[in-house]
Length: 93
Image (cartoon, rainbow, N blue to C red; front, side, top):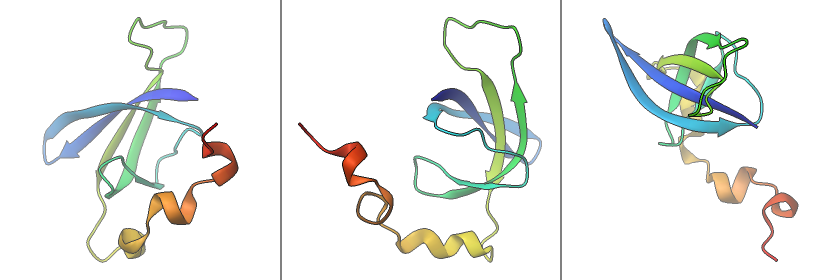
């Protein structure tokens, strides 16, 4: 798991969204579905090499909201817990 900082690029501003854990590092040009349930386009990924942070983040991922007509917006009806989660991985003991 990687801990990353998500930054929203909105006009000329860069707004800190939050820190999240991810299983695979996104790449520029990819879409991600953020914890708010909305799709974002990944503009840039900046990783810290040789830097140890007490906060634990290893990368900054700069995103902007996906265009309203982007294909990824068709995912709005997906129930992540029902449709995508792996029941074996998330089973309760």
